[in-house]
Image 1 (tube, one colour):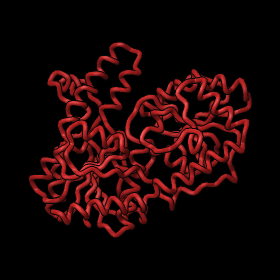
Image 2 (cartoon, rainbow, N blue to C red):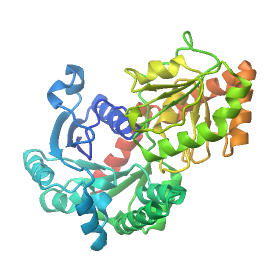
Image 3 (cartoon, one colour):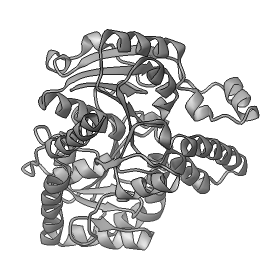
Image 4 (cartoon, helix red, strand yellow):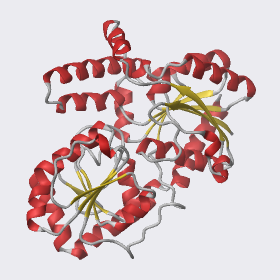
Length: 400
């Protein structure tokens, strides 16, 4: 099967949830015998030189990038605001990317062209004009829902007003697009139902973000217990707002009970955060190996109050056997069970109580982590998930 993945950023090295999910599918497609091509935007925020790819990565796919300047520009934002067009979408419309897409379609006869998220939707019309490939939208999340939740949590009245406009424009666009494709995939049952509520009449396949079982290997031999940690992109608004909430409302209580306990915060662009100065908070920043870092710490916290889709970092944490304390929204879309393979907390008191129980009762802490590992193996192994996705593709290629 010849598969073309279209991406709005280059996904190597895979350091955030979106990139990890896409890259794991690329690896799994390749290992299962598909011929994979990736056409990615090389953005100012996530630049990468393809020539620097390790040789073993180059063997997975034909990686092609096109430079796209998607920086936020106030004048462009104002024009889109006045014309009532989604600026979130407009930032990823590129004539150079469109031209390269046409060139690739002429060079190769693809069976599947997979759009990695809503921001690739503007290229559907180009694909229809030049290719007979099945167009698959891999919906990573409900995009406008992220912006609605960010707007709801914004305290500044003017920022909230603008964020609400962005969310409404993105919502109008997202709801108008579901039937533009041939096939739809979503990462959760909930997202699939929302797409149907938008009027989607396409065949929908649920395929969660997989983890690579050849890379994620639990190792508790060097684990610092007790310790808390957070890992995630520190230039992503939901992560920052969640961390600020946690430090302000939970960490102070925990630190009083455990004065020697350390809370490690890892993620790229840590200099963009404005976390309050607190005793024993260690800002690690971007780590060389995320999985070594995660293995070295004990309790993982995921204090998210906005966002949508599925949290890849929770899946990876489970695959490493971590004991995770998350908000309900953080664990949204993952069929886990509170008190069995994860701990759910939505208030400062609940967060504090559940973290305290983990730190005071190491057997309880270990059982939750062990259960999480077994759950991840059953639900999110990349080979299993991708095999089912390819069967879905084959079914509809044959039907055509």
